[in-house]
Image 1 (cartoon, one colour):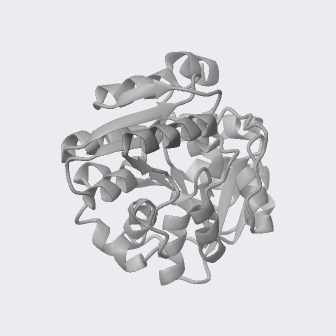
Image 2: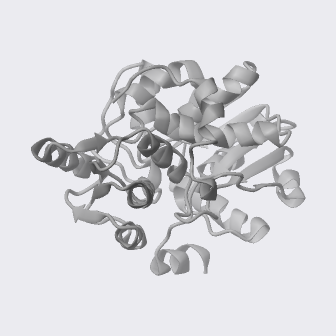
Length: 317
């Protein structure tokens, strides 16, 4: 993968390359939620596109740089794999996605519907990634690792560009942190236009490897990633993402699953959106420490909405 720095100029130019279906997502507020937290909260809604996730932006931008046809291999909890599958089909590439044996069935079905071959291997996402790397090497295929390439982050950074273009000027961004492309892309853009902004990432308490690694500035793995938020359930951090975070992120906080579930239900009640656990992590952090954010302009990304019928019933009914 290319490890050059994430470039705000490339974020600006990315909008002409990314599938328009992913761009110009809504930016919404709710006054009752604002009153609840005594802050002004802006939600960037990234679940109304064809894959119901922000991941299509970075996946499509990365594939735009490749010559077709290519054999592509990646690992995914489901949303990045959907982005690779859909962009691969549209741009003439064949995609194979590795996912954990217990991966979200809605996400698996969607990846297949978009044309990917899906292989289920390993007990979790990172085990699936190991299998994907081995398979790609054997097949002489292009291995795509979310969080490990600047163009994937720059695609995600167009979210921040759109917020700026709409007149949003947050004091703080609370960003769900999984493999790091969302955080580093958004952070790179906002730091270029407003160096004073605080970029604060949010992990699940049961999956703290990215927080531990960022704070120590070295790779720290964990034996498990135990959280309902599969989109941020990382136990082996990506080196490039951690390196990029040092110049784009101020701090990382952790929230427990109970706080995430509370945030999901509040988003559903006040915004009418069923957001998957990872996408609610930003609001969960805000609710968990309201005094820290009081009176501030807060931005966060509702970054995905792919849940099984069983999850919807369990979490929202």
